[in-house]
Image (cartoon, rainbow, N blue to C red):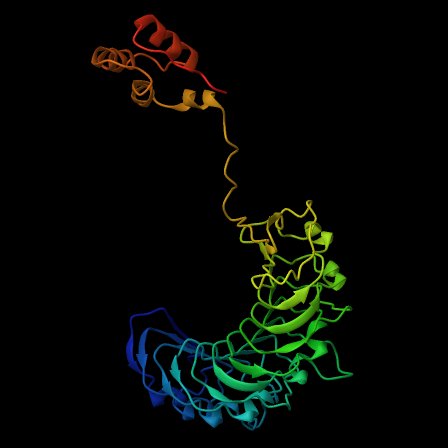
Length: 368
């Protein structure tokens, strides 16, 4: 009757036993262990009824084609029962080979995570994932172009896609489909370090977006006012991309003021892509160095306090006060006397100055 088996961040080692495929009622299997090795058993999904498979470790070999084959429902079962909904095989750097095209035509698949693997091959243009919510193919050896149907079919209901991470895929190129900039449910869009090109549409509609990273990509255009609807935006990275124009002042009204929030619009090529001056009411974009505009601000750490005058020495301990005043005085006798007097309750800077004058061993110049 085992339905859920989860061994997360465990110390187990060895390989995945083929016998797990014989556990007929198993629906959810999670195995994440650094010492987990071997290959993925083909029977695990080919004959079973797994709905969720998450495996992370040192898995090698290829992804069996059976993992993306839909089993025929048994008598009395609904069509949805036992269909794969979550396939997560990321962080297995030795997992290689090509991925079956059938993995991109799963009617019930909601999550597909294959990041940080050596999987290769060309992304298919025919994609039919009507329920997909999260796709992470970053840091793989895949190639080709971004399938337009990954962001929904024309004329169909709005795509439920919430996460699309294709970063650091060096051979990913072509033009970014325009419909991928009009996903009402999307929360993260990452094309960092790809050769994906295209122009940001003026009618961009990413109203739920939280993270945008187009750095080191081939995208161009201007920062669209379409982002005005994005009230949840907390991370914006456009460095080394072809994006230009004036930084819109509406960024000030977004949520770029919470922990972990940052706005980075660096023109590292010194081509003057971004027009100056930046709106001074945008707290995350206020530093300008020549033609380089660095709008990065770490909101996770509080800003340093403003510099204080000489009265700030009142916050020093009596012992430290004595050592500092020692540099302003002369004579060994003064040093001994100061150390003795420092044992008294904390002195203010005015009292310390009076002390030095009384001892007649030097002068203190108070500068404010």
